[in-house]
Image (cartoon, rainbow, N blue to C red; front, side, top):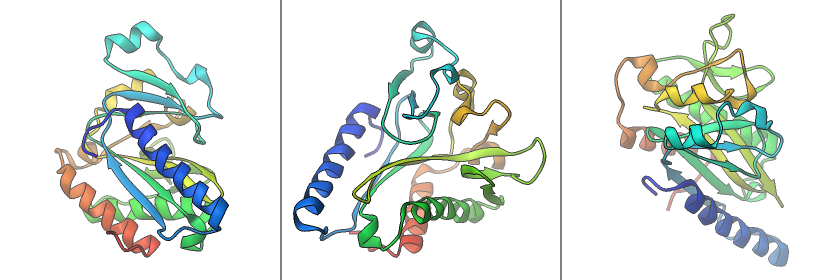
Length: 219
């Protein structure tokens, strides 16, 4: 979808989600496994349904000053930031058609980004007990998140997804406790590699790894 506002994209994926859940309710299955949406958002902060408003560290006036908007949404997880240079991926997938559960689905999303980061050189991994993908997860005081994950599922159909920091302006994370953490840093491919990366190339590699992991045919 290129660069698109959060609200417009949310409504777009919600319409697909509603159609897929409606078909499952009446027919019991979907012909297609789902839709995969790639997008970059203008500066926006989103707070998950289980998140704490206190993790938003600026007020409405502060948001206006930095050109950002704020939404409370229906995914899991706490607060996160989306903005230019960050690849946001919304898989609206029927997990029953893919023959996996929600736990495996999140694991697969993480695995896809771990493999993506490996294509660029750095080693990424999971952090025990925490969702997402991290650099230096096993080094005390050095763990930094490169990809956040937050999802919603109903009738095993998913919404929301992952936010992968490619060339993200990390200063915007200073206005929140990212994902509720006060003792963890965030990073990006640009930060780790020392130079900006091609967003088109990042989209290509992420799409390739998701296709491999979920055994998809992209059409």
